[in-house]
Amino acid sequence: MPAARDEGGVVATESLPGAIRVSRDWLDRIARNSPARLALLVFAGIIAVETVLLSLPAATASGERAPFVDALFTATSAVCVTGLVTVDTATYWSGFGQAVILVGIQIGGLGVMTLASILGLAVSRRIGLTQRMLTAVETKTTRLGEVGSLIRAVIIASLVVEGILTLVLVPRFLVHGETIGQAVWHGLFMALSIFNNAGFVVIDGGLTQFVGDWWLGLPIVIGTFIGAIGFPVILNVSRLWRTPGKWSLHAKLTVLTSALLAAGSTVAIGLFEWTNPDTFGRLTFGDKILASLVHGMTPRSSGLSTVDVGQMREATWFLTDALMFVGGGSASTAGGIKVSTLAVLVLAIVAEARGDRDIEAYGRRIGSSTVRLAVSVAFIGSTLVGVATLLLLMLTDLRLDVILFEVISAFATCGLSTGITPELPDGAKYVLTGLMFAGRTGTMTVAAALALRERRRVIRMPNERPIIG
Image (cartoon, rainbow, N blue to C red; front, side, top):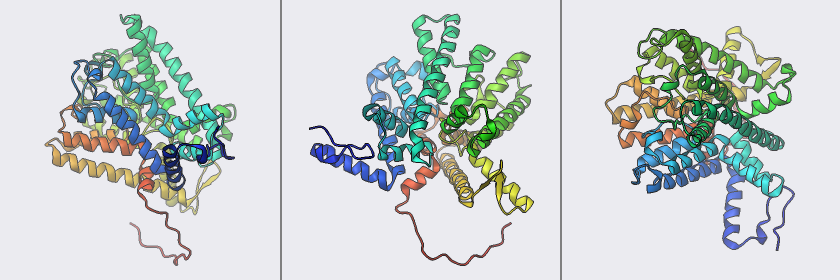
C-alpha cells in the first residue's frame, strides 16, 4: 500500500512498518521541538560513520588500523570542513581513506540538513515542513518558503564552482608532470577542498611548492571567497546582480565586510611577512603579491597555505587569530562568528558613539534582538576558545601563542596550523575535536540544542539601566 502524504509532503506514519514508524515519529518530534538538536545528532552520526570507515585497515596506506583518536579527529575535521590533521593526508591515508575524507568534506560543506532536504526533494519532488524546518536551522533561513530556492542555489553554486575549479586545476597538475588519473583526482579533491573551505591537501609535499603559481593560487583565492560568502548571499546576488541597491541588508553587509577584511588582511600580512626570510622574504615581487593574496583570504575560511605558517612572525599570527575568529559569511562553508556578526557589533558601537537611538545601515534599522544575538554569538565563541586554550595549556607545555592559534583555527574550522597538532597528546586532540564540532554546528545552534525549554514570561519587569564602563 503506498504511503499517504499530508499537505506538507511528509509521509504518513500509519502506513509504515512499526520500527520505522517509531523512528520517524521520534525524529519528527525532535524536529518540531528542537530542530537544532536534531541537526547536532545528524552531524554526530555522520562523523561516527566516517570514523568507522577511517578505522578500517583499507583506509590507511600501510594497511594497518589507524588509532581511534586519529580516525575521529580526521573524520570530524572533514565533516566540519576544518582541515586540521594529526597525520599527513597525502601519505598516511590510502585512496579509499582519501575518498572517505572527500565525501565528508562535501557533506559538511553542503550541510547535513541541506543534504537531507535535497534527498527529500529528489524523492518527493517537493519539500515537507519537517525538512524545511531542519534546513532553515542549517542555512539560517528564517522564512521556510525560501528553503527550496536556497537549496537550488546550494546545488547550482556547488556543482558549477566545483566543476569550474576542477577543469582549471586538472591541466595544471598535468603540466606539473602527473598522470591523467593523478591530475583528475588531485584536481577534483582540491576543487572540493577549496570551495568547501576544508583546508585538506592531498598533494604529496603540500602547497608550498606552488607558492608562486598563479594558476593554482588564483583559484584558491576566488574559490575560497565564493565558498565563504554564504549561500543566502549567493542566492540574493544572483537574483539581483544588476541592481546591487536592491540586495538584502544581509547581503550588503556580508559582501562589504568580507571585501574590506580581505583587502586589509592582504595588505597587512604582506607588510608583516615581506622581509621574513622564512616565508615571503625569499620570493620574487610577483610571488610575494600572490602569497599575500592567498594568505589574506584563507585565514577566514579555507586555511590553505602556500608557506610554512609555523615560520610566520608573531604579529602575523595575532592578525590571523583575529581573522580566523571572525570567519566567513553566515550559512557558508566557513566558520567563525561570521562577518555579519562583526558588522552588527561595529554598527552598534558606532551608533552608541554617535548617540543614535537606532542602529541603522543602508536605510534599514537593525533590531535589538539581532544585536543581542550578535553579542551572544561573540561571547559564546570567545568562551569556547578561552576554555579550550586553558585545557590545552594544562595538557601540554607549549607556549600560549601557538596554542591560541591552534584553538582558534579549530573553533573557526579554518585549518591553519603552526604544526603542533600532530604532536599533541590524545587528550588535547579530543579537546580540539569537540571544538571543531561546536564551531561547525554554530555557537547558537549548540546553545539552542542544549536549552531544555524556551522561557516565556507574561509579566515584564520595570526598565532600569545599570552603569556601563
